[in-house]
Amino acid sequence: MDTVTQAAIIGIDISRDWLNVHCLPGGNRARFPNKVKGHEQVAQLVFELSALGLVEGF
View: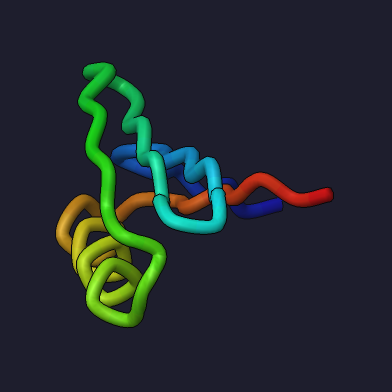
């Protein structure tokens, strides 16, 4: 079985107005507006870090 490894994991807490992002390892945090521009910024961050992105769901 192949194993997939990620350089970083990004957790995203989604609220009406904001996307609160926490990156591991390192513990970096950022906040982006929950608008198209903020979505693009988060997508770019995930791409740049070759990260696995996880979002809150309910």
